[in-house]
Length: 333
Image (tube, rainbow, N blue to C red; front, side):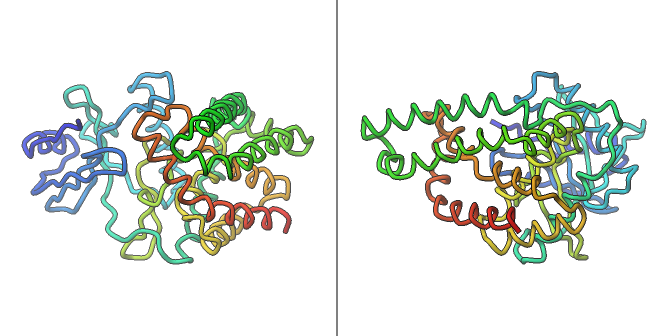
């Protein structure tokens, strides 16, 4: 269970950043209670957030935090306008440690969530600007498409075997798997074939050798339209070097609700800043089509989060198929 910090503890932490809190309110995220604290002070409102280590990377909390801060400094130096400003402590650091947990603070962005078509155009532009930020030539990544392909093939095999078991035993969603399972298998096999095409293989290799700066976790909850009309992406804990194509696909899936208009607006905004070749469009469409949520749900089917993920996947399947058609039309235009 997430720890609820007292007002006294919040005060001790925020004073390192030169602030005196008048009030603090815990705010939960989709998967975590008390994910962030909204702190009101005489000078304004701020977000106080505990930094959580990602289990996806086999590195320490400290190493992950230092990497994130290094990227945040780069974004600040490039005057990237879609990230809330981070505060420094009295000693110039971007975080303070309290009872073994690092905390950082940013300005709190007052505003609303995504909702209008123009918001998705703005989000596409903001993401393209992020991906165009020049990284040091020595930058490397373990989060490229090339690195993920073996894992995806393994997960696709797990799903195929899991579907056969569910259908045979008439388990949960057995009828859905019977009707739509072949489509999931076909999408994966098409992707493996596409990845071998010379133009796509060349892009995948370039993606591994020349990574981009990526947010890594853009969701609807992580995008705020400020009261002044600016678009902000929040929660930069997972910022890293990685695949711009995967970052784009994740943002499309997690924000556009498989709505054709929102998808088209997002793509239009992205290409206003970073035009894409037809090969890049095809690669993005292939990645978007992969049934990754179904793969993840089949890996640990007895976990509550896996069941919830699969519930959403099944419920949105018609919309997903429509969204894939929209992406395919875009890739050919």
